[in-house]
Image 1 (cartoon, rainbow, N blue to C red):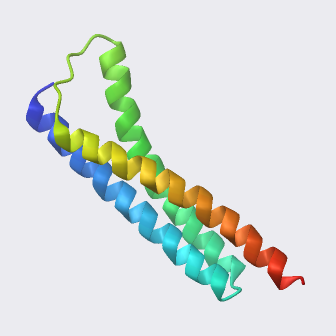
Image 2: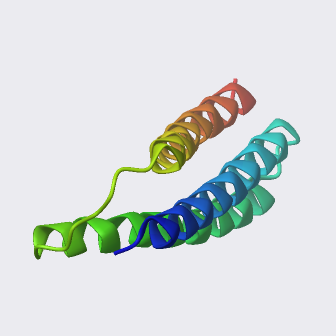
Image 3: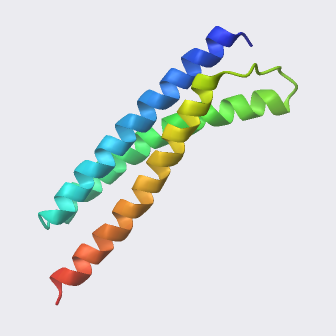
Length: 106
């Protein structure tokens, strides 16, 4: 695998992860408005984007596991940061959504 291939995959991971993060923050705004149905739609869209980013990452891992040489690329480190951030944002938004639901009942 060439360095340019890795860069392209990294850019895709960044784009999908950023899209996912944006959807999760939109879900948080929906939770704040007490619109759980809309929040769930945004969570679902975020999950679709996050899954695309994760698949790109897993394809690289599988290739390396199968013996392909994967060159080091600092942009890939940046992409991994974006992916991990999107996963963290997802978990926090879901927790906050549950908190908003709990506060609504009190």
